[in-house]
Image (tube, rainbow, N blue to C red; front, side, top):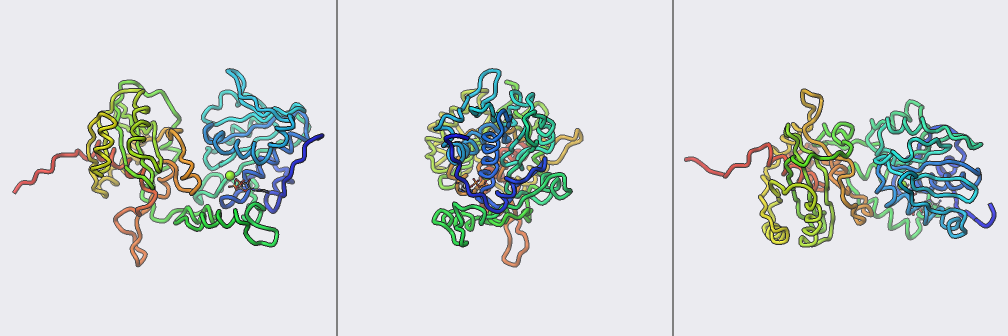
Length: 434
Ligand SMILES: Nc1ncnc2c1ncn2[C@@H]1O[C@H](COP(=O)(O)OP(=O)(O)O)[C@@H](O)[C@H]1O
Ligand SMILES: [Mg+2]
């Protein structure tokens, strides 16, 4: 291609990915090993090399794609080709999906699986899925059925992900040989590890961050292991059953807000709706660190602008934060019932599948209003859904489990418990009879 030089040093699994021609391939490994970059680089290089290639780049949600994956694509992969005018960004229209359009007729359509209407009717030569553990196996199979492009090149879907729990469908799919798994390592990333094996300055910073992680997040993101958390509290939580697509919430359903305060830890505010059978749906969530309560109040008011007035705002006990929040919301709040074990049991019984095969508590896809970049950076959970699989019992010095949760990455789980306790545990004035 005239006028464009693509500088990229592929190592290890990144090199294997460039050469791989299998129809289904997964590049997996710890965080920061260059998985996304390798996948994006291959996509870009293929578009430059094969005129008229049709590609699709997806993630579970549109917001996460534009917020991270496309930023990497434009900054680290396609920058020179874009400034040379060989690739142009097309923002999409009512009928056409957003895309990178190449001067040679190649095209990369981009989108989130939460809004598949525009691209799923197309046929592709190559598909790339970032953070592929977030999508369902059914979605993967739908994508595979679209690999029917006509450009003169092999058809391939490339997935990239960090390890998840050991029985995740994508791991099982690789174990049974349906998908080739390439193992990416930090040594594959020249931005962090020099050719002699030593760490670069950026690599030192990044590895320190990974070493500071704890529990199952450390095993997965620092060591790259498909590890299960031990002592998980909500073992019944299953994204397949409890996370559901967005829907139009009927205006008459009661609304509950639930708040857990924090500053260096996130303040979490959850917007719950209740259907006529008493099922609860988390439809929106604020989850942000380093903001004053009065600034959170503005976000909460924005969240409340739409839909009915909440029946109650159930809050964590901090008296000062509650007073500030009440003043800025112009609403009263109620103190959450804070006893932990009955609250946890109440949540567990809602997670169970009821007689109709459905649980009584749901998280709606894309509930998170805005992802906190500091939490992303620190590799901490950025919403309640991400907390749940790592919400574990505290461990006694001898190794036995305590009857109380480990107090870390528990803020959304606390808010969730408050709303369930409010609904199910009949908060009554504490009257004693003698
Ligand atoms: N081969 C490479 N050359 C230069 N920089 C790289 C390379 N691979 C990865 N990087 C950089 O390292 C960082 C982490 O890469 P990324 O692909 O986001 O990792 P992962 O998806 O494995 O978490 C990014 O800033 C990326 O640009
Ligand atoms: Mg990545």
